[in-house]
Length: 360
Image (cartoon, rainbow, N blue to C red; front, top):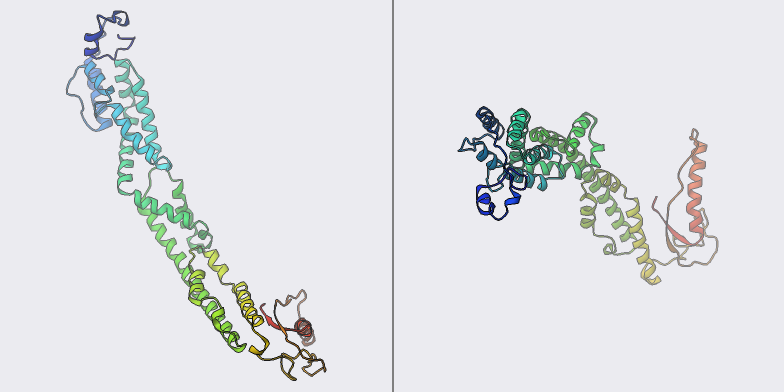
C-alpha cells in the first residue's frame, strides 16, 4: 500500500520505495477468485456494451477502470455524461444522466479491488438499464433537441393563447403544455402531432380576428376621411392607414387581437386631430359661424330656430354620451324619454357654443 492506498502504479513503487519507505505498507496479497473477475468482466460488458480489458489480471483491470486517461474507464465515462448533463441541465430529461453519474461516483470511490468488482456485479441489472437510457438521451440531444426546443418555444409563446383553444382541443393543449416538465422518455413525434393540431386551431382564430380588425379599421378610416373632407381638413392629418392596420394585426396574442377590435380609443384620437386642425385654422379658412340657419349659428335655439343671439365661432368638441339604461324599456314613451335625455346631452354642449362630434 502507498499512503494506505492499493491503487499505486508499479512505476511509483519503483521510483519512491527507497526514498519514501515509511509511506509504504506491506500487506499479504489476497488472491481474487478468477470466477469473480470473469463475472465482473461480463457485468462490465453488459453495462457498457464492450469488453475493454485485454488482460485477465485483476490488478490491471482495476487500474484500467479507475484510470482517467483510459477512454473506457469510469472517470472518462463520467466526464462524457457530465458534459452533456451540464449543457442541458435546465431540462428535465437529463435526470437519467444524473442518476448514472451518481452511480459512477460510488464505484469510483471504492478502493478495494474485490469490493469494487462485487459492487458492479451486484448493480449490473440496474446499471445496464440506466446506461441504455443514457445512450438514448445522448441520441435524443443529437437528433431531436432542435425539435424539442421548438416545441418548448411554441408552448411558451402561446401560454396566454391556450385559454382560447376550442373545447374539443383543450385536453391536447394541456398535454402539450406538459412538455416543459416531462421527464424521460419523451416522444417528440407525439408532441409534434399535438402541436400541429393546437397550432392550426390558434392560427384559424388569429386569421379570423385579423380579418375583423381590418374590416373595422378600414370602415373607421373611410368614415374619418369623409368627416375630414366635409370639414375642409386634409386627410393627411390622420394616422397612416397601412401602418395602423399592420400594428393592429401584428400580434400573435389572441387576447391582444381581441382588444384591438375595439376602435373607440383610436377613433377618439383621430377625431381630436381633426378638431385640432380646425382650431388651428383661421376663421376664414372654413365655413363661418353665425350665419342664420347654419349649424354654426350659436344663436339657434334647440328647435333649430334663431334665438336672435349674435353668432360666434364654435369650438370643436368630442363627447361620449351616457347611453346606459338600468331599467328595461317597454313602451314608446319610455323610448322617447330615453332619446330625449341623449338629445339633451348634445344640446347642452351645442348651447355652450360647441360643435359636437359623438365618439361613443
